[in-house]
Image (cartoon, rainbow, N blue to C red; front, side):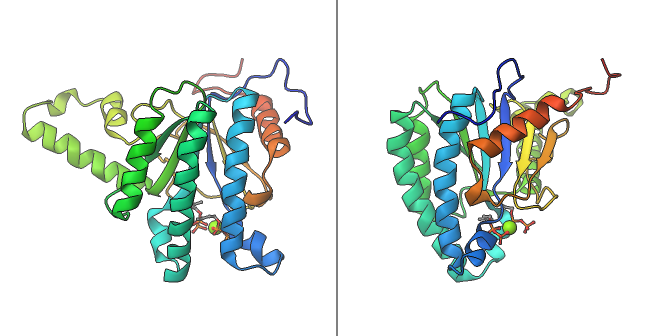
Length: 243
Ligand code: IPE
Ligand code: IPE
Ligand code: MG
């Protein structure tokens, strides 16, 4: 588990959000079916949770399935759902063994009932764990999340629970799926793509972005360390002048 780089004295990002991309290309390079790429990707997630925890990262949020990913061929979607079922099952065992607090963000009702049950079970079983906070974005789309938040806010206005004049940025944040997570400090996207693909649009307002050509199944501790080092080279201003 020891790393290649020495991070002593460096700022460790509190919350790292990841767009795990490139599973398909990883498989293609090896003349394997795409599904094998997704399997290798799931293994990489398990490893990176442990490494992130070891490095001192407190929150890790990963994009596993977007609201747009339903548009993939049906065969790929069902293979991903099957993988997800197995993954969630292993995750329940793993979370308690490794003291991981697991949360799921995204719109659940479109998922199969047995998957929803597993998610609820996982969140409940890990809710008292105080190690790393691991969040899985599943059937997640930032625009969908914002629309759902607006609906809830409007409903609470209609019901007289809140007054529209009192709505602040904090109010909006508190209606998002990420209400109990701090905003990410660092966002990593693998595989050379440099776009957000509907990921955490509100939450990433002041986040540093790190893009790497490494394909997700190859993303390991060394790659995570490189991202942390780059993060340390950035001058974080938050609208102020440089220090
Ligand atoms: C990311 O890998 C995993 C998911 C979106 C589920 P891709 O499947 O997008 O891999 P590429 O982009 O085709 O290589
Ligand atoms: C984003 O990756 C979604 C996930 C990693 C789950 P995609 O590969 O689906 O994104 P696009 O379609 O290339 O933007
Ligand atoms: Mg992709």
